[in-house]
Image (cartoon, rainbow over all chains, first blue to last red; front, side):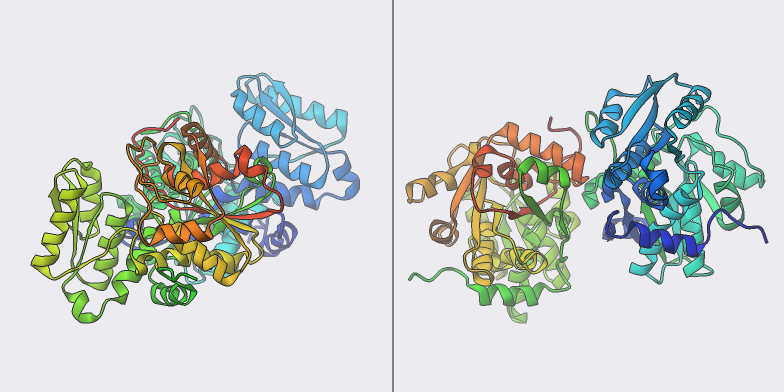
Length: 318
Length: 318
């Protein structure tokens, strides 16, 4: 039996570590969505988490796990998404510096958000090689610790705390669905869910326009995401060296949804649940409302992670 | 000492009556809004109530208080707003008919929403006289009970349960702010709040474009709302014969906010709290962010009712 990046004990430790720092987010329900899905859905509202995304869990767990000596030198990451904001705030709340590498093409509003949480932004060329090189230079120069967005044991363990809380609130779930981009959330939630409730079924949700995890699962062999094309801009990356083995072995299936299904689910959630969930955050709900998932037998109660709510309100998506 | 339309005992009875039928809505907080307001704000999320508004409390209390014989004949109201949907659902959940009189000019989507909750819609001319006459005809024909949107003892008592729950969750509030249209929510919450916590300060929040309650309070004499002009379309009406005396005698002050302040508060709440609150629902937050309220001394913790979240998502408000 292979050893995975994290186990239930690590996730329980993470839960203790982030208690009172990250929000224990509410679980919400909606009669209309239940009726449309044909079963009972329980939404873990990580859109209401600090910085508006589950990423704060993993970032906080990683930052809090550093020794005082390590922490004093700060943390580094390269990200233009929710992880950047999450790490900036987690660092500020420990009183240490956060160095965030962002492509110079990133929207100003994202740079401003990171700086609003006290992060120090370093711009780089918009390609992975320069992002990594710039981050490595910062590590060399400052001695700060690199905290990547998903492929890191403490990050995966932190994200898994969402499923731990969900199952504490609704112990009799038959299944859990989470979005999958890099796979930190899905991998952590899978380990947590199987740990506290063996036999629970765990599913990934992915846009058809960035379906590397679905294709990897279908073929049993990791494939990278190339040329993603979806409004779910938090789910563009490939799964990682630590997250993929967990997804490969423990996740039952990754379902894909179209852009129209994402938009429709998003509007439904905004209208009926009065919750702002971003496109990437709503793919689990879109899966639950789709034909393929509805055809599954033996699934009465489903936990679904609304993974984030950071969306531009300058325009509507429909 | 005058006798008012309802007292704490009636609100406590209402709370028992609606328990398990209406949602006990969560109280949410936001660091960003606290910082902007200069104090701690606690938002009672009635946008997450059934039908998306506090109106479900009063409607359910009124419907559940009917005897079986009365209830069997149904209920009637004239409204094109949240009360119409609330009464329709409250009636359906008791298994009785709801006759809803709506002006023929009301948007189709509002008619569809009422019918979606099982209400029987009767159209009338778009003026108060014909609305009342049509409703009275329905009462005469069916024997159903008229449940008006705010000026009714059971409706006021039902709305007051929002403040009761808010003070159970956050007992050390110094003040409460609610929107004021007809005044059912403000009157009920005032009686509840003063009943459980004598000395707590209660404020109304009103759009400048429909400021009858503010003008009535300022002059000490009831004035009607004529020609309202505001995006807060749930707050267009005058206060009533039962609600005004409570507001006159027990509410400290009604603050007004501009349309720009409403829009700015709404965007801030959507962006930072990830909650969809309608223009009428957000006026309390707009007051808390305004200069006049910020100048008040001795107010550290403020409870604010987000009264509803029913808003068209075909367009943005900014």
